[in-house]
Length: 194
Image (cartoon, rainbow, N blue to C red; front, top):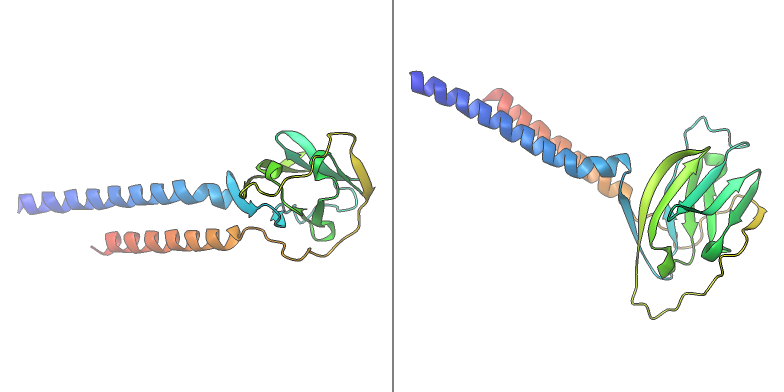
């Protein structure tokens, strides 16, 4: 009797430890994606890509400052009703929809030198950090654009260009979170009712 009671306690401890380990592994894998840290989007040379960045619902779109950084340096920004682009981004970018607090950056066409880390900053606050991974065989040559002065123009809302893509990360994240919750619930219920 003493040994069966001891083994039951040992089994409960093992189940509890296994549940914690499974939960820790799932959270360690899924949490960065859910929080938007270290997210990555893959695009091919010549594609149109949308790098997501959504502002808070209470953002006053008439007085919003949006800055997209690439490699720690300003790439493009919206301020005082103007959209400005620098370097190789000139005439290749747009914002998704300021009126809907969607400050996602659309790049068309994607070039090899677009590969890297992007930071979306709204009103001087970092909102999103995303890595753009550009794939391609390198046969298509990128146009050379000297760094020069920024090019600014009045901002006008536009529709998505044909073929715009955000990489489909939202659906993948939702599926992963759903699986984690389901597996965690099953393990927890099994432990609870044994």
